[in-house]
Each structure stands twice: as structure tokens, then as C-alpha cells.
Figure 1 (cartoon, one colour):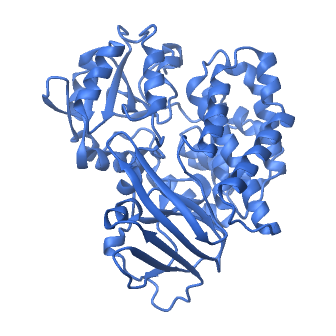
Figure 2 (cartoon, rainbow, N blue to C red):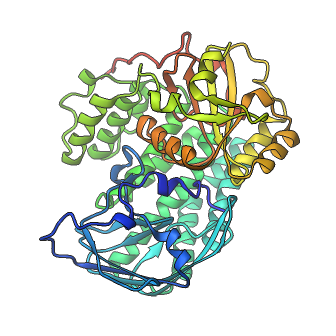
Figure 3 (cartoon, rainbow, N blue to C red):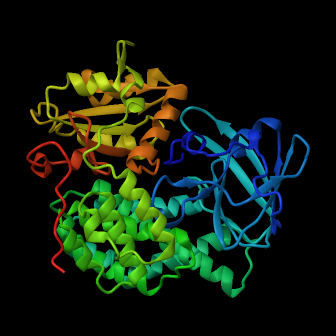
Length: 481
């Protein structure tokens, strides 16, 4: 089962293969991708073509490099692409790294396709590439899951320091790299490929650590993680290769950890003091986007060319003090009695000044575990300040109802969204909050619809003490330096 909702990729795409067109007629294409399908219906799993957003700023899917379609049979897809650097491309649900000039040929088949999960198989016939997502049931997925599971169950500073020691972290990275080589025996043994896998493995291990740390570890326990996280940041920056533009996502996860500790802008910046200037500028952009710095505090400090465009977009589209758009407010959802509501009505009818939205689904194992954890004390069920809302992205209403009954969630706080509206809502939240499409995900809003925290952490760990005095994002913080 994938942690990303199986329709997320399709809802955030910019171009569908069904409407492919060549937007660079004079381009010289240097890279070939051929997909061999077992049956015509397999095309559903690879019908969209995108690129992973570089630098970790904005929606996680971006328009692909210039490409064109070569006429092929119903069981074959043939792409010519122009790459300038090693890139992470996405075909449907398949994330893979590929370098300019490579020739990729792989077999693809969907073995199971249900509302709960997609099981597919990929066999690389030739091409110096490796795929990022292969499911938690296969060896790479099992390995990452073991990291996630270990982190959230560490209980004391001694075990935390031991598991997150640089010695052990580097061992985990080496293990993951070895698993990649075993999973993809087609990989070359050249220096460039080894470096790409090293960077990918570091990102993969860091992602699992911070996925657990930011969403499944209590605020009180995070103090024990502070020192090892600082050491992990140092290791990541010392072993970084900035030519891989997707590497910045590792610093986004580390940044979010420091934010979750309620550090102000100056304190967060100080954590990155020994990092490369480009990394420091990345942190400034995130502080600007999250409203912890204002435009004047960032002005003239962004010199890295690719970031200038992001700076302008963030200044123009900054989300603080901005209500959710009508497109989100008007989205229709259903309650347990099959009555129709809009999200706007849920906000307006709330008697609490804050709403905490949990985006989840019965098909998502981490979602189920998070709900089970919350059900142990239901600490916000009778809160006068925060109204918890579970929004299930589902196609199977019976499983949804069974989950509400099993974990005794308050029915008036649970809603379901299905079909095309769910895909559109995922797209809108990605655009307006920067959400990357992962499940579960948590948002904190004021009753007035203003975004307070677009990455609020697990509901079971949320404390009313972290609420601002009034609905709305924190005021900009002056820099000490």
C-alpha cells in the first residue's frame, strides 16, 4: 500500500498523456523511455508524465522537461525527453531517477487495483535507473518502514542518541543503498551512479526519520531529539551534492522539526549557521512562506538564481492571513447519514475558534495507526477551543463506517469525500497550502478559514497549549542578526 493516495499523482498533474503535445518543436531529445504493458488497462498506472518539483518549494509535481510521443502500439509507450541534469521523473505513480542520454526500457503491469491499494510490478530491461516507490511489501519499503517504526517507539534519550548517532545513521544509509542495488541489478557501477544512489539513500533514510519525528513523536519527547537532529543536519550538509535539486527536501523536513519545537525565526536560522549559503537561503524562503519573516527581512538576501523566482512567487502568494479560497469552501462532503455539506458550512457551524483537519483514509496504514492512537484518550473530543475533523478520502463507505465504529470517533466530526471532488480538493490544497500530497496530513485553521499551520503534526500529539492567542498565523519575528 502506498502512503501517497493512489489518485494524488493524477490530480496534481499538469499534462496528461492523453493530451500530450510537443511544446518544444526544435528540441533535440537526448533520452528515451519505453514502457511495455502487459494489457491495455495497465496504461492507467503510467498515463501522467511529470517531474518532481526541484528545491522542495511549491506543489510536489512540476511540468516535465521537453518531450514528445513516438507513435506506438496499445501495449507500448514511447517517449523522447530532453534532460539537462539527472532528474526525478514521474510516470503515473512511478518515481524514478534518470540521467541525460540514458535509454530506459521497462515492463509494467498492474496486478491489483482497488480503492484501498494498488499493487504493480516493474521490470527494468535496460537503463541505468532506479525507482523510488516500490511499495512497503517489497524489501526497500520494508526497510524504510522499520526506520519509521523504530523512531516513533524510541522512549528515552539514551536509545534516541544511540539510534540517531551519525555512526548508525550512516550505517542505515549504506544498508539502503545496498538494497537499491539488489532491487535494481541493472544499475551501472560508475562513479556518477554511485553518487546518485548515495544522495537518494540519504534522502530516503532522512525522510523516514523525520516523517515519524514530525508526526508521531510528542512535543515533550522532541527535546531528546534536538542534539542528534543537529548532528544529522551537519552530516547532511557535509555530504550534500547540490546538483541534485530534489536534495533540498531533506532540509525542509529538518526545518519542520525545528518549527515544531516552537523556535522563532532567529533560533531556526541559528540551527543552520554552519550550512552552505544556498541551504541558508532555502530556510529563509520557508520562513517567509510560513509567515515567520516578512518580505523586508528577506529582501536582498536571496542570491541563488533558481530561488529568485520562488521568492517572487512566495511574496505574491504568501498564505498568511489569507482565507481558504471559495473553491475549497464549496467542496461537497458527506456525513455518516449521507447528508451533503460543504467545507465552508463545517467552518461556519463550528462553535470552536479552531478547526484541526485530519486528511486520512482506511487504505492508509499510518492513518489507521494515528486514529487508533488518538482513540486512546480522545483528548480533543470535548475541547472548547479545537474542533477535530476527520476527512476520509474514500471509495468504500462501508469500510469508513466500520472504522468510525471501531475507534468510536464522534460521528459529527467525520466526513467522507469520494470520486472527482476528492481529486480536485487534493489539487486545491496543494496549490494553496503547499501540501505535498502525503497521508495522513494535518491542518490547523481558524474558524474564519485562515491557515494557521499547514503541517500541524499528528492529532494525537496536538496540545491546546500550542494555539496562538487569537486565530491567525504568528506575527513576523524580527531577526537578531
